[in-house]
Length: 385
Ligand SMILES: Cc1ncc(COP(=O)(O)O)c(C=O)c1O
Image 1: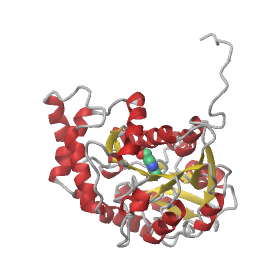
Image 2 (image 1 turned 180 degrees about the vertical axis):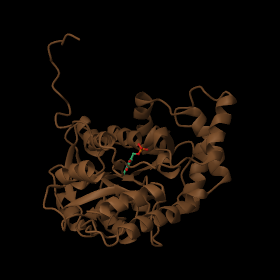
Image 3 (image 1 turned 120 degrees about the vertical axis):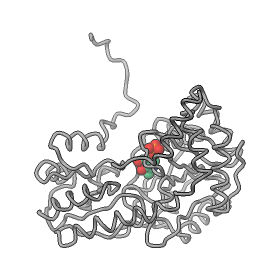
Image 4 (image 1 turned 90 degrees about the horizontal axis):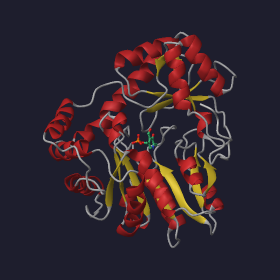
């Protein structure tokens, strides 16, 4: 195509191809085992798949209501009450979205104006900062503290100003696999109580939490709940990341603004999947089995790499395990991740890419949402190093 003279100045000049795309392409090129991108390689529950099929055959293939199918909103409110004791109104306080990513984008767009500051805890999932910047917001960074990747709330307090509009949190955490505790929630309450600061709480891994710990949702804490958009993803809970289906809870006044934005981004999300999920969640609470399911996978993977030169602290949540390669190489994590893919046949994600200015702790992130045979093969390759 002939190039029209370029009059566009990029709104996201620093953004290139995401690391997930780069590492997955490299894994394909070198026929490496791909533990980089976070997606399961096992199937979605057959009953759920057949329900979707059934809904399509029944003709539920046209636009769903903008807020989402009513019976799905109802079962999700029931679930929130059952799990966390939180009461949300199905008509006014929850919205179905096209994935957690779209919920995060819509929430930020609904509340951020030019010059507003948004506190981002780093390392951070990669969709947060571009969404802040596209809305004219200014990300203000606070780093998690090694070795357990916890939040130092004094660091957060220090960066709160009169311009702070939102604090973004993520528990269980991607990429670090850490989880926030009740104490963290109380610290956050102390910071935001009596202010106009809002919270976007990314809880897409709510069910993937290990060693008997309980997920602390902001909805359990009234001072937090009254100011929070809470984001969830069906993709994580039902091994179906490709559906790009999620939802967001918020009090009525915040949800009203969220919806004004949501309707002009996507208007509405996949209809047959919403109907199928409503029936499925009504008849099954198998999300309660996810913690045990993924804990077994984490333990299996870690047992297989015991005796390797990698060091680790077992992940507390999410389906990511960090491995420390400092005993193997002094290379930058981005270089080592590429070499590990090309020469040793295992693709991972270097954690430095989740920071605005790379912090290289010699940690690589491995996704263990994979079948045991694949995890075993990957571990054999890692042990051979
Ligand atoms: C922490 C975190 N938030 C949000 C998302 C996005 O979820 P979805 O795929 O439903 O858009 C992901 C997906 O990997 C994630 O890891």
